[in-house]
Image (cartoon, rainbow, N blue to C red):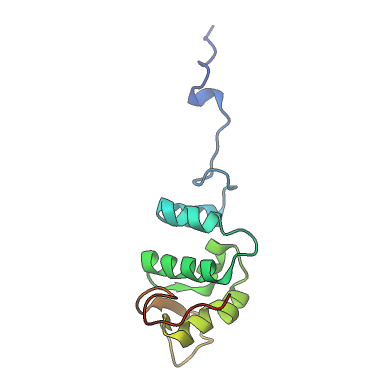
Length: 131
């Protein structure tokens, strides 16, 4: 007869198959697991109704770390509707010169992605983000 697992051992705890502790397994957890710990923490602490400045800075950091990403990819990471994200945040950041579209002549292209063009929103020389 085998001895029961020692208290505190991995065998005694239920298996958490999520790559991000506290999140259910799935595409969002998988995508977040690929980000740096500090960025992942920033995203997870944004909450359901983040302040505009905090959200736009998180977008900038995601693109800075991952490179060009679609509104669908960003929406998955930020747990937001991609169309709303593009309309309310990505397009204004493009207009401010913080981001650029990868397919500028077809803004509604299904593979449209965004990438950083320079410093984060609100940095020296760029307009402040309206609160």
